[in-house]
Length: 278
Ligand SMILES: C[S@@+](CC[C@H](N)C(=O)[O-])C[C@H]1O[C@@H](n2cnc3c(N)ncnc32)[C@H](O)[C@@H]1O
Image (tube, rainbow, N blue to C red; front, side, top):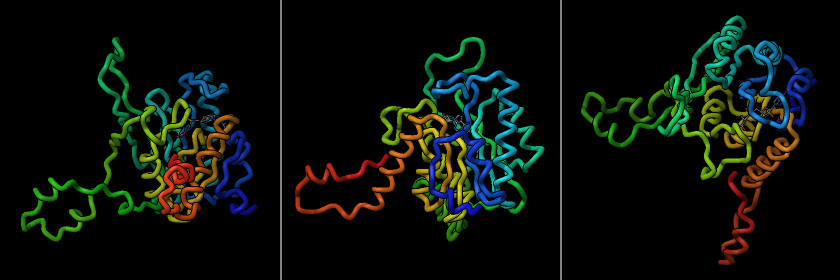
């Protein structure tokens, strides 16, 4: 069956059932943010399993997802220190491990654990199917600030390409978790910041390529794809979240499709017509 039939769609379905019917070796990138098994309430028991059952289930969906990846494809998986050791050992038996990325959630220093250190990061595994994996470094370089540029303005640095194009992102990503004040925030317990997923999509999927996200949540991967001219296939078990994803995608798509706003000074009308960003 052709991948076209599934592209740019969100399915209200168990990812395991959905992924089974995708063509093998057809996906450019997998961005997976599965339940962490920390007991969160997603309206189902997916985050409340016995450890062994959780790891068996993880191996099952990972095996299936990997079979859908192209030979130059790659995979990012969000996890935490609780299960990253087991999950990474499993993935290393199937793929090349490229990075362990630490997402520093920028948690403010207030209270926290009293019998051990407060955990303020998530762990992201970055794996590739082969050494030929797609990776577009230039699309994710970080611009130097003016101060650094000035400090490096001595003649030995002049004309250095890296100063103009920016530096290579490191494996420590400090991006604030989403709070109610953030415009992109939706009503979901574990929504990920777009900034993080956009970086993954730009670096590891060519334009017009297809990204598979088995666990949509609020549809962050789908939105990152829409913003960056990539295609997506994503699944969400919970019907309320599924509806939320559809709405978020609709708002995002209408932002691109709406004709230019009228400039006749009718500001009230303009407000109503202005599509929300997220
Ligand atoms: C960690 S959240 C994903 C959050 C998402 N990355 C975002 O930014 O909004 C995991 C999601 O997977 C969903 N889920 C759990 N088990 C699933 C399954 N078997 N198939 C599809 N979705 C599932 C949960 O309902 C939850 O919304």
